[in-house]
Length: 358
Image 1 (cartoon, rainbow, N blue to C red):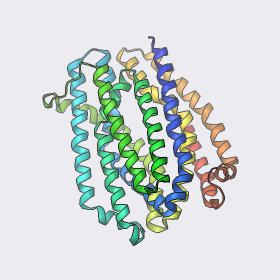
Image 2 (image 1 turned 135 degrees about the vertical axis):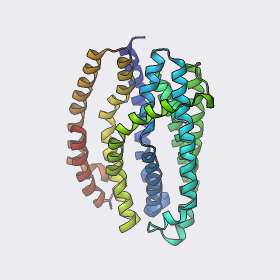
Image 3 (image 1 turned 60 degrees about the vertical axis):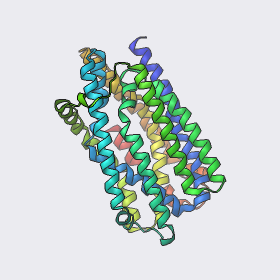
């Protein structure tokens, strides 16, 4: 299969999986809010955002996975490949375990910073602990997803993601209408993550049978190389987090959880707007790594030029549409009573458009 065919196949399946992954929360969100209320939804949004901050503490180490795995695999450097995979795997196992231990110790102090009603504090603690388990399982196994992407088998991961998202959608709906509330949502997510990780590990070993998991493959030089590359990506990653999640923490600290909900809903619409132009870039990293490994600078430059051009063409119409029809979008999606979300959506749409174009 040619490189172009690989890109088309991977992009097609990735787009389908991501489209459902983005659209399903939009369908479920009004149902979730109607069953658990704006306050519990605010807890849910803040806890997930808080867990998301932990990824910033790894100095973007995972950003190096696709580059190094792809280069070693295409050059058939299997010892170096296993050094990369094992170094990444064991780093994230220890990293996520350490994070979880620290958060469990200081859980009550952390949650105390948020204006959580006393009667919901126990629920917030439970939500935090389940989210930590999800974080540990998903993050510690990141390397296996990177293996599939690096060997141009992203479509396998995408098919898994699509099936798991459908499973999660159905189970979440059943648990909500059965009265399990916020706990039901988190249980469904936990089950989806466990199943997804199992299949990603299985397929990684199936597609790359040369993989060996051994402590002897841990290597300081490999760690330094991966860490150096990751640090270059940290600034972009940190700025993305600040633009999407820090506002929710500020609202949770200085305001009410209801305002967190309004902001989170507006942010979900802008993230959906980013979804379409960003799909093109999911294949840039593994393809660029393969071209770089083959020292094909001409096609590498062509790749980035074309990707940048299409990003501009797709972004502007989408966010102009969101800005103009913000009221119609929110009213149709959520109904009346979300005027603040409409106001916030227009501000965020302008910011996201500038971000994507620049």
